[in-house]
Image (cartoon, rainbow, N blue to C red; front, side, top):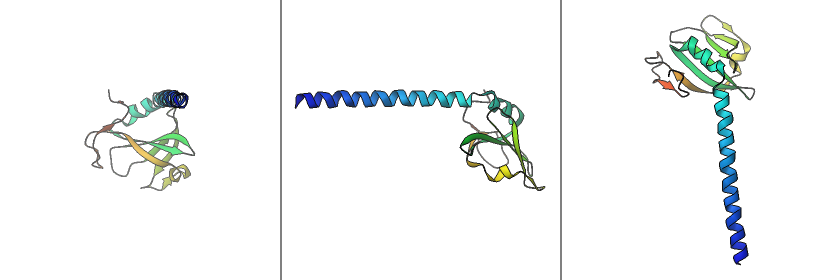
Length: 126
């Protein structure tokens, strides 16, 4: 009975240690992804607007727009390269605009016209 208890005790510790290591490696991958120069380039062009992090076919993309009515929204890849434009007001809507999903605000300037509170998930404004 003691052998089984000791064995379970060590196996529980092993599983716990494995989970800690796995979480740390996952966090490192996320940090590398968000520190790519692309998000900083996007921020430099839209620091007076709003930036969303979205998924497109399983890949992370960014959607950004200025702080004004009836402006285009632009979609960027992780490197900050524009891959789509969504100008709903004037009918220039690329097909990619309807494919982005699970968008989350990662940056929103002060006093945004949407009423959204200031957000800076990745510390871009620092």
